[in-house]
Amino acid sequence: MKNKKLEANLSMAVSKIFSGLNMNALKYLLPLWMSPLTGATLRCTFAAVAFWVIGWFMPPEKSSTKDKWLLFLLGAFGLYGFMFLYLAGLSKTTPVSSSIFTSLQPIWVFLIMIFFYKEKATWKKILGISIGLIGALVIRCFHGEYALSAQFCRLCSLSDT
Image (cartoon, rainbow, N blue to C red):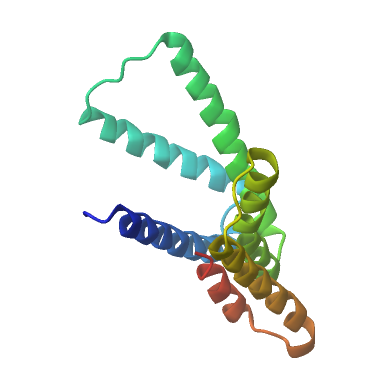
């Protein structure tokens, strides 16, 4: 693709769609079929096998033994720990709460970038964050009184791009 900005936005949209579908599938599977520990183990095992097979077709990387051990430890604790905690939290929450948490992630990243990394807040970024925040508030405020359906809340988690 020649337009890198379009490619990046399409990649992000596809990633968020798969993330939302994944959340819905896991919300169904966790209480009925597997525990969060089993889910995290299966995901990490299949990802390791996939990277290992892809590695057969790639040129070898030049890295030291120390770097390889560091990457292994980071993957084992960071990725596996994140997946386990994500699946444990997802198994104990409602679709409304999980869609709110999902829609608030970009807002937290934006605030961290402004306060700690001194990123400039443009009007487009503020507008996008405001739309996300309004969407999260609408889901939260109308859940009890007007009883939004679980399917609508899951659809909202898909729209977080």
